[in-house]
Image (cartoon, rainbow, N blue to C red):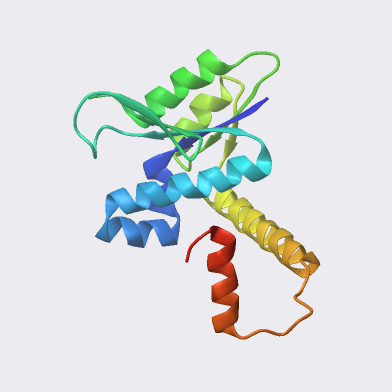
Length: 169
């Protein structure tokens, strides 16, 4: 099994799309990152865990699932780097390969020492762009294979048929 541990704020600060969104709405940037990681998980089969520092969100430690992605906010005075290192140790075994997405140079060396592989924020972004193209190609193939109506109908008629199909009047 492959597990990807993501340093959430590090990735948000590195990806241009997320960085500009962060300046306007930090919560929206976090949500978008989690959505992107859900796409990554669905396409790659990796288990994905996104870790955010408590630095930006004060309060107690919090864990939850969103889009089947595990999201962790660290406890007060614990950095995402520290939590990621602990997770890399606790999740590591012979059948599991840990990957850590961060561009934090110090963190990269710390996780190398624990046998984890690193993915820089830029590499992850490139991989996400490749995945996005793969998803678009799959959707296009599905759409091309869908049967086309042999009887031309107006948009109004199509809406009536759709309401009937849904059981609406």
